[in-house]
Length: 618
Ligand code: ACM
Image (cartoon, rainbow, N blue to C red):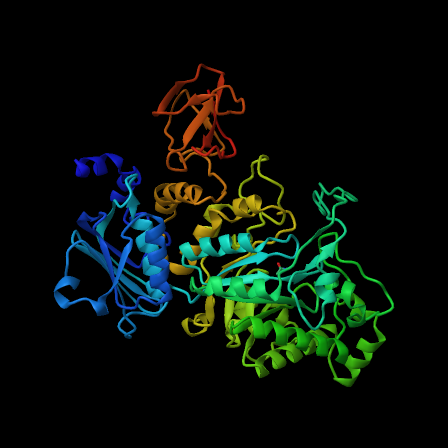
């Protein structure tokens, strides 16, 4: 009876998995070999572990407890040999031997048991894969996992996601939720953009005014700041601020570490530093001036002046930062310093002459080199945006290539490590996700899911030896026009899943059709259940098109499991009250007439896609 009940309660997702070579897993594993049958979790299932205190084991134990599955976790060391070969056991054993690739794992699911072997973080990644494969039922204690053997390891060792908390502040709970979704998709570097013109968000004990003054702006530019649709002078008259105490920072670092994520702090310099100057004008080139925390977007003309006093303060700040963050990498920004206040400064003119620097680019290089030297004296390495190439790269620095790939290519050719994050590669998640006028306000460009997915971080102009310097890939979420957690998630998801596959999976295992039509719908439904917002893709099979002829067949599928497609045939904006698509539709269009089929996806939680129209003209 129980068995029957279980079968009836199986979610539909399983059937999608059956003909999907990747079994629904994102990112696509290195190799998947589907077996016959499935492992069944029952209330009697036990979890046998050989390292009960390991953080990955703690993570899966907690997951299973919350999911009401296999609540009993048993240390294999305390069991006799006979019992460890029991059927219906989930055996999680950690292998630290070199026989698996770095961060790799092997997951073997049979009808009798599940065995997971992992190397280092690989154990955690195997667990993430296992979690994706578990098909829960509505009966506590019951679930099934399809039989398979999966061997997996990442393509790149740096798999990053950035979050700008300076333009808009996001609290610790949100940051943890962000880290959670990164961990689900095997990303391992969280780049935390903590300071900028519009806000200083990290407590520095030695310089308390950085947060007392620098963390709060009087108002925020709303609406577009530049371009043909700019609305000058449109501010919200509402103060905005927030910062993290050192205790909170530490909490986030530990939280991320338990999910194998390194937090890379970014302290911006020399540009994008107006919030710091509002607190300490003496670090600028014109100490007599008063500065206010930025309220507008773009690039400001005032920033750190390369004086001994400024360097002393920055070394102090970086020391506190390095005491907080164990990351080997410290991001020091380096981008978009327009040199305006340096050009006007007598001090800078003299410094350029004394140090025999060529020009202001030379001064930028002087600045970054001094910082890099200090950071490296503390046993760490700087990362900077590609402008740190200006005037020559500091030894040991890592380049984040954002203005296309040219900076990354140049750095790799010079033997510097590189993280690729070009806006032109669909990796700027502040860019709009479709050309629909129904998309929320965004800036910068057009980055649909397919573009993010299609990016390859290894430029073919590099030799294979040079390509080794490309340590990975990252996407960035700048938040000028992202003021709420809901919008941040909308811009992040599902594009972050495409980033994950680009960062983890071999190009030969990537397949956009399989990703977007077979796997994404399942994952979005799961993200919904986990409480995430996301952009609902338009119906699968629909896109804004004009077709000519007299007979047409429209065949669609929902872009999220369990969602409905609603449509109109008079071009009107469809709503939840319009017709529901259930089967392929056939249309005959009379001569010189047009039918405009317009459709949307509405998920079971009420999220909706933008609408898309298919114009059928005869
Ligand atoms: C950047 O987008 N300014 C790095």
